[in-house]
Image 1: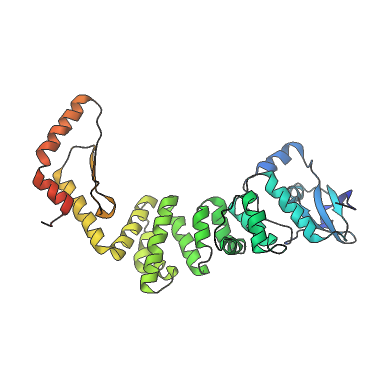
Image 2: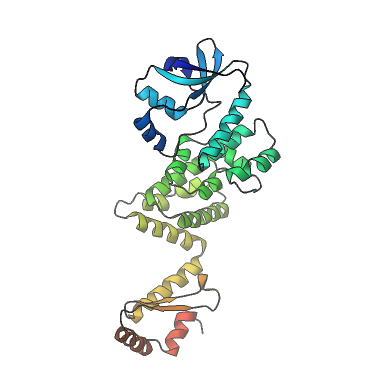
Length: 321
């Protein structure tokens, strides 16, 4: 930009700036490069008053230099007359071009861009290059993520919650978000199970007209989450069963009776009967695993002896006639 110059500045002359800072980097790749080659690219700084400069770009390099107790760092210095918004826009464009960004970085960038552009302009000009979908109110959710608690943003960085889960939680009240994070920290389940549990959680909170946090701090849930005798997978299954039993008691009872009945048949190992989803529809499945032809024939024989028409009726229709 016009009027910029290159100088060696002391670290004490350079100050952190909330205005220009975006988010921590997702990995330490640049730190590793700095250990090998030192600072090669100049930091960007904006002169705010004589001998005092705001750091615009180069936060990882700046932190590395402080940790190494360096005295001077090479800088591109922009004069005090340089419009701050021009520098911020330039920094954002460079950030976008460097590498794929994580959700936290995208959220902070969108929040900063909304200082200079309308929502429509941000969506049309920047959402495509940020690889963000054009969904209603997404900018509100991203802004909420950009201003969320450090614990919530840390959960996004470390992958405790998926991006879609984070967007979904972004407008929840702080207490409910905190309790969800506490639960997911304990059960460490997959993304698909996170979404399923959130569906149940929202349904129960709506049904009882309470907050999700109130559901999660109930004695039933906390006794599962902090049960030291259960592993993460067992906790997840018990939480899922708790919600199913409360929200869909008839379905839960049907699943339990089906499971007990199939177990009572003592079918050969590797024979699995699967009902339609939620026992709705007519598409039943049976899977037979075997290691050799003789094994398959043995299982066929055992199945034919145990699975009679009467047994199939009970399996498919329960105790209904």
